[in-house]
Image (cartoon, rainbow, N blue to C red; front, top):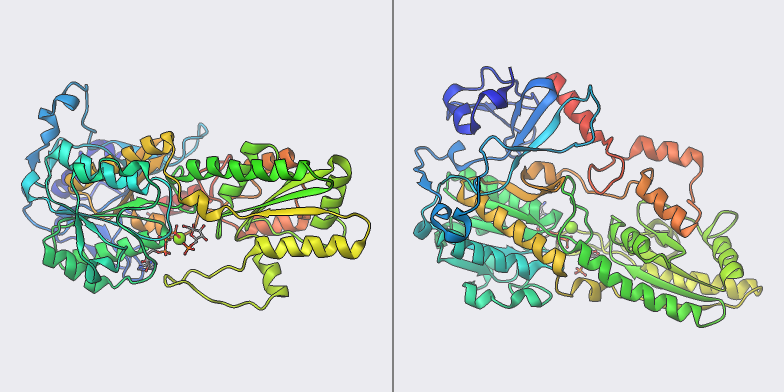
Length: 529
Ligand SMILES: Nc1ncnc2c1ncn2[C@@H]1O[C@H](COP(=O)(O)OP(=O)(O)OP(=O)(O)O)[C@@H](O)[C@H]1O
Ligand SMILES: O=P(O)(O)OC[C@H]1O[C@](O)(CO)[C@@H](O)[C@@H]1O
Ligand SMILES: [Mg+2]
């Protein structure tokens, strides 16, 4: 019997219990206070709501306020009387709709992991004048932050008639150390045309108890948290504390990071804008290098642990001869090394362009420079400047060798790329994200991150987002495409590839090979369920 087909929604699960559903036993205990089983994580982390059905179907559901607050009343969704939306046939999302994580399947493939589809529900758990929302932005800048802020405010006002929205000033610490900013559609009207975040941002300063005290004291009942992997970790513990205190407060995460290092989701907002903006720097490097004998244009792009911007900017440009990313180790000297390749390329073409992600080659740097082990206030390792270092190493090599004199121009556009406003397609993407977050919170869902999975906006439980980082898979077709476009050496022996394949967990998205280990996990879990 397929649980999900036979039971309408989680409310139905509550009514009928989970007796006919398989549940996945990752648990050390369960909570059945409201008549349905919830699985606890292994180390006090958020409870997991996992439902299985026929043919290996797994729904990794998100929490709902009714999971821990009793007798919550519901209200008709005000959108049904909204002239802009009432004309849409089937505007409301069916409560049973879920989105498949894996869409490339074989005849015998299990149906695999699913997430709850995002969108407006027929019934909501907040009255318009009861809602007191707040928005906070944390971590590094990213194109589109202001668009998301604008669209949350406008979505709450125009779709749900909500009039009380606060901006938290300066990231998580702003909850307890700064004044708030009143946000109205008028205040946010033009902000999407500006880069940065009108709310300010910060790293560090996550004091869960103080943040939740502030939420409680101010009477806030919807919290919209925009930020990267660290921010979503912070959002997860805020949700857990809110739940522990039994508050009717919905916590919604909106994933932000130009590094695109958040797993499961198709891609993060601002990423397209960053790749587009990087083209300007690569073009400049190309123009500079081809205008001078043995010219080398070297561009450093962001990407602390994940080289997505560098990879996509390289593929888009076609002027790049070598792309170096954190996921693909490289070496400088000897046969098959970078210096040999540079010499070959300059002899063939007279110029070349190198793109390097800021996290690439850090192990080489720490061999030759003193590794500092410094961290930023959030605990992220502070990187040494690989662009400056590699520029110097290339210059030293060719001047020592005396065979060839080179002209190297180093361009570091990193902060310029992040500080621009989002482009048109990111603006549309940010709008959908913001609206999906608002629909989810109004419908009483909580403890979720909203994002597209295979093009469909979904509510994804925090634990799935924060368990690992999304990285470029260098045994995937996309990286092979890059290697064939640049003609650079792979810097890897067959033995390295075997070892890499053994160690790495390929991500499910932005990869060209969907045979992700996530699916193996689902199969394993389904078997244990
Ligand atoms: N494990 C954690 N628990 C609670 N809060 C956290 C945790 N990790 C990070 N945070 C908080 O989240 C905020 C942002 O984290 P961080 O600086 O790592 O940026 P991020 O959200 O990962 O964005 P990006 O790395 O893309 O700039 C900080 O205020 C930090 O204190
Ligand atoms: O703003 P900061 O603290 O200099 O951080 C820079 C980091 O932020 C990121 O842009 C991620 O947001 C990374 O690519 C980069 O390493
Ligand atoms: Mg981060």
